[in-house]
Image (cartoon, rainbow, N blue to C red):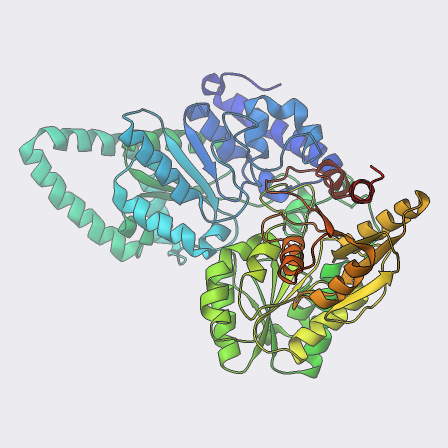
Amino acid sequence: MFPEHLGEITDMQSKLLCQQLREQIIADVSKTGGHLASNLGVVEITLAIHRIFHLDQDRLVFDVGHQCYVHKMLTGRGGQMNTLRKFGGLSGFPKPREHRADAFIAGHASNAVSVALGMARARTQNHEDYSVLALLGDGALTGGLAFEGLSNAGQSGEPLIVILNDNGMSINKNVGGVASHLARQRLKPQYLRFKKAYRRLAARSGPVRAVYRVTHGVKQMVKNAVLHYSMFEDMGFTYLGPVDGHDVNYLTRLLRYAKELNCPVLLHIKTVKGKGYLPAEREPDRFHGVGAFAPEDGSPLDQGKRESFSSIFGSTLCQLAQEREDVVAVTAAMPSGTGLNEFARQFPTRFFDVGIAEAHATAMAAGMAKQQLTPVIAVYSTFLQRAYDMLIHDVAIQNLHVVFGVDRAGLVGEDGETHHGVFDVAYLTSVPGMKIYCPASFEELRAMLRHGVEKEQGPVAVRYPRGGEGQFKGMCGVEGASILRNGHDVTIVAYGSMVNIALEAVHLLEEKGISAQMVKLNSIVPLDVDTVVDCVHGTGTLIVAEECVDTGCVGRRLAADLAIRGKSGIKIGLVNLGDRFFQHGSVGELRQLYGIDSESICKKALELVGRG
């Protein structure tokens, strides 16, 4: 669909191709859903990269990676964009197993420069010849890892190009008209050609080299006085920019120059998120991640506004904040996704969005808790992984009262393995003093969040799934375990969203003449082992159904407790995701694929009772 030899196309063809790419992105994402505004903003820079570099060999590392659609289209996958984020189709993120040109997996933010520097150093060590680029957005600079990478990369001397896509946050202060004029002069092709020739001459001639040192020093003095201070240059980068990130031909020339410099280069581009599609330009946040929509006006095809666990969390936290002045909310660049928009509107002085910085959010919350505030951190399970050290070191050791709203616990669907929240059961239960509540309904979420804020001391996690509630809409209390169904053949234990799946399995077993007892865990720390032991004593058979990895799962803890108590002869079956990573697709498709749907629980029960 697109030219195979992008390095040979003309400047006019480049502009036309950018228009074609935008049209296809809008058409495809309007059907599949996905990240729209961010991809529309990087059309020109992505095409410019492909005009200069051969990405089957050269390495392009994306930061976060949700802006990789144009890259996929230019590497022969444009015809598959209608499968984007669908089960068995293209991933919405770079995946090396999907294509050689996808240099590195990218789902979390701020790591691209570190990864790219590692690749550059490997190139040097292996005496190989290829280019390495890192493409990151300005939002990634709110993560400390980005600066760790920049600091090391700049002083490394390794040939490396960092492209900073600035589509909102100002990196440097406004430098005024004179400085803007000088910046434009520095980046004119004539200036760049002269600078390269001057450097080559200085390298060959001693007298010219001496003159070069003097003029270079004078230039630095003038530049620092007029352009102010560039932290990137101080780190060791040759800084180019800021430049128009939507001028594909100018970007192509600059990238060619950056490649020839053979040193650490930072190219700072200014872009418009949602460029070329008016609804996305007007509301870039709403069009960052979208479901299917009408391309004519951007209106969502699913107009119904459904309540979700995230929205219930947000409304409950607002109620708590109205009642208690010590309650504050913290998020790491996800106020909308975690349901905190209304809290931010009602309590602006008690709402803290720290950017993509989960570790900082957790450490800051520890400081708040030490000084008698009650911080509630709303964070996706997959992103809380990044704050594990702070959770232990800053919060748990001092038993500080920080409440974590662990959103997207379990399989999340179309975003795939970098976003599934399947590890938090293992890593949260390993933290001494942590309380972990697992609501299966909106009513339980309200009660458990309130209990965690008002009644508990020390760290608390309330973990809940993406989306809405299932058939279970009741309330079984906050702690301990509750018996939802009585039975005498097999005991099925579940918690959180898996309660709905387990109840379906109970009905399937009833149809086959098997009497199943259903036990719901309201909390997994503390874990009500006594209730489970009493139930299993009657049935002699235990199945624990969980939407998490096998290592560190609740089922293994229960099995160990039963063994420690000398309860021999009990048949035990664990229904969980196993120890692996999980592809993208709908949650229903993935549950079936990985064997944690109701049919799989039913099958396991039949095997244990001798009816398999």
